[in-house]
Image (tube, rainbow, N blue to C red; front, side):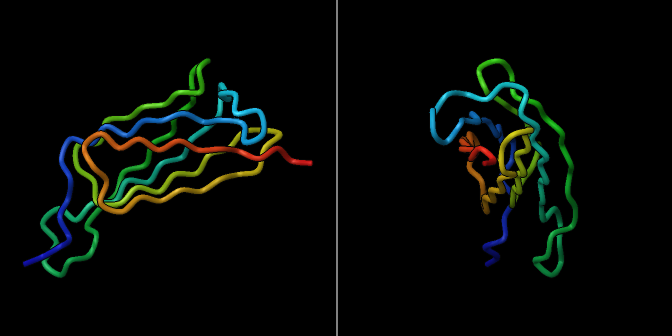
Length: 104
């Protein structure tokens, strides 16, 4: 029995915050890689999708993914350090909040 199973109809969402003030960060850029197995004969990823998102005025982002096995997220905002998050085997309503540190 394979443990490498895609999750269908994933809604990935969350907020981007300033790590010190804990205030939301609007207009932050998210680069998302969404990997999936599909009908892989050898339990390796068969494909991926790339998504470019921008947070709204509340620091919120959301994207619908048809199928997912692993999600990589890079968050970029001028004046802050770039941040990376990864989630294997996401759930249907995957919430990932990210806290960015200011550049000194």
